[in-house]
Amino acid sequence: MTATIHIGPTALQELPELLKNRAFSKVAVLVDENTLAHCYPTLKPYLPEHELIQIQSGEEQKTLQTCEYIWQRMTELNLDRWSVLVNLGGGVIGDMGGFCAAVFKRGIFFVQVPTTLLAQVDASVGGKTGIDFHGLKNHIGVYQEPQAVFINPDFLKTLPQRELKSGYAEIIKHWLISDKDAFIEQRHIGLFTDDWEGLIRHSVSIKSGVVEADPLEGGLRKILNFGHTVGHAVESYLLEKPDRKLLHGEAVAVGMLCEAWISKNHKLLPAEDLDKIETFLVSVYEKVSLSEQDIQDIAQLALQDKKNTRSSINCTLLEGIGKAVYDQPITVQEIVESLRYYTLL
Ligand SMILES: NC(=O)c1ccc[n+]([C@@H]2O[C@H](COP(=O)([O-])OP(=O)(O)OC[C@H]3O[C@@H](n4cnc5c(N)ncnc54)[C@H](O)[C@@H]3O)[C@@H](O)[C@H]2O)c1
Ligand SMILES: O=C(O)C(=O)C[C@@H](O)[C@H](O)[C@H](O)COP(=O)(O)O
Ligand SMILES: [Zn+2]
Image 1 (cartoon, protein in one colour):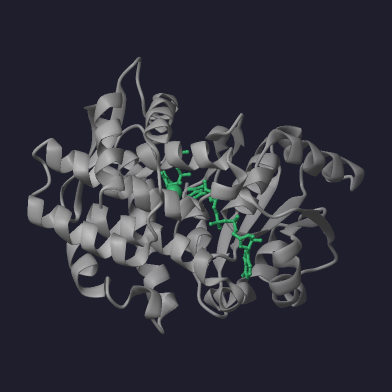
Image 2 (tube, rainbow, N blue to C red):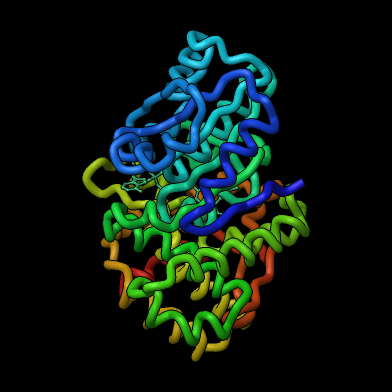
């Protein structure tokens, strides 16, 4: 069953009732240094007595080593099976906190309070939790729904512009896979909107609809992975190169361009649609420079994608703006060519 999602500047007002009704034995809040400084003061008035678990921010922290630290703190704090972990942060806190809670003592409760645009429109919804392993994205994880999700768009006021743009990539993805009108009409307003709540509600409704139809990604849910076959490979590759690291959404933007190009190559996406996607994404995201060696290495990483079966790379492609098709076999060589296309844009 999918979790209840509360959206709006007063969303957190619903939290005390949930905590009281479920009579959790202990409440712990997972934060990083940024969410402790910028978001915890807003959350605190809605919490009963609680403990804090603090980790360092960043994708590099989304590892088994950090999980060990979190489990150690949960143990020291004597969290039992009726405790709840409140994950206050972006997708890293949400994915890793959700995973730690889902397997601690075979599962305690958790609540998502997403504080980045990316986590509000995507990561907090749908129950995918997990961590990176040896640089491979979300390689270890479980599906586990939180007790509830509380999305307060006011948290975005302190979010750096680069992080906002990263989250915007997942909004664009939602438009590209299922809402042509939104892509055509809203793309130029996007980042300059004064209605974040409206954008968040729209994205959450697209994602929730897909997840409800196919929670465990047997089929349809794979459309939410558009841009991620190549995007995750690019993100994993550059994560190992400290001064070239990309944010998740920035890598997904590269991935969407490459996979849109592959869609056209497969005669699924009309040239004029590729043109529109290209013009728009290039206007929002800085080009990432990639050498021929980078391209060859990135393409190999796509062989680890979770949608693959046997040796087939199964990609989600576009049949047009607003319509995605999943399980489309592609080759390493096509990924190489798509990345070459990207470098020439
Ligand atoms: N589970 C899913 O369905 C899903 C979906 C999309 C992405 N993800 C994962 O999400 C992760 C990316 O999440 P992200 O983009 O939120 O990055 P993130 O969690 O690293 O947060 C980005 C940065 O913003 C800071 N921050 C958070 N909230 C803030 C605020 N309100 N004000 C100021 N600073 C703030 C954080 O401390 C961090 O430095 C990736 O690991 C990706 O794989 C998961
Ligand atoms: O929720 C989903 O399903 C998605 O694919 C959403 C993606 O934006 C997200 O990055 C997800 O974590 C990727 O899942 P993965 O199974 O490819 O790790
Ligand atoms: Zn994503």
